[in-house]
Image (cartoon, rainbow over all chains, first blue to last red):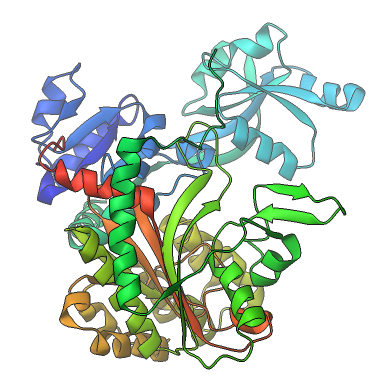
Length: 211
Length: 324
């Protein structure tokens, strides 16, 4: 059983190290998690690890009481019925609109064709952004390396998350617009938020103290 | 050849039906004993009728035209149809009126989410009984029903739909800024709520009240909160004092509780069980709704999702098999 009976979904990948460090400081035992790279479920510690984009799914269904994932994931899955309890501050990255360097091919497409094609892993965020800014965009959803799409002529631009901009630069892309910044968030299942109120509020207070 | 059925709908076969029936029979026995008369209303209503009840209910997922071109919709809950029944068929009956129902309601679903388009609800409407007594009766009946079906670990979240609006009044949040705050509250985004509240620069005390109050939940000690909106909190305290110990020990006071339907005016509740990650049902007071149909009567009601109740009962039986 985890800390005070709480179970938490931890994101694998870029957010994992900072997340485990935070969980250490607030009283979870993460030694097992750090020692086993392939195991996914750590019942003793109350920790289960998964892709960041799966965290809201597990937390919404109550398969974990709490979860940590990026705001980018939450913004893309905006209809998930989870509580967003705290901005954890780490895992900072920026959602950007980028195109190949030089003359802006997206602006050119908008002017001459009336619509630009944009590749992204975040179709809803991208669609909302271009609607809000009054531009017609045809959103192409891709699952893998988004940077490839404008280089091959599939699209004129991309909407993607970047921490340092290195991958964009290395592929000859430049940031045209910053959409918003994302950081790691603590989320909670709505039922656990009521039934384990004391435990969750206690954890939240320790997280605030640690920050 | 396999003919599929729409996602979010399902066939119920005898094994499951037997278990569902066992649940609804126990619920019906409690309704009978407490004098709640069962009603059925059409699954199809005129769109204009549902729109009069609630704007959200007027955006139903399933809309069709009849032979004369009228717009018909599949009902998304039973409260508005029963409000219509009371105003049209019981126009001069002396209150209070007690109704119960077992009926399907229809909602839209999002793809790949395992949501139900069609759900079986068991519920009551208590019309003409003002709060706090009417609310207490509805809450007590809810607990009696959940006890009768044999659910062990359930809790009832109890809040008030008018609490946050009263709070916004009390600290003087301008009209134009309110939708943004209420949006963060309804979407359960406390990070966003903090951002919106800080942007208003209201001063420390007012900001703290707007941020902290909706996060208060727990036993009756959360009602000791001082600061604005004390009369709404006082109403919750009055409810608490009138509840029997059996219902009282099930209640979790939740000053941040909000329901998606807009017709609630006072106390609202939601049913939780630790075996299921989503609420099993809910309800509340809707003192203005009947008036929109021509009969000014205060009312309260609730509905339980029978399929979720079944899942909770099965889940409670399987305790000890959870992963942590």
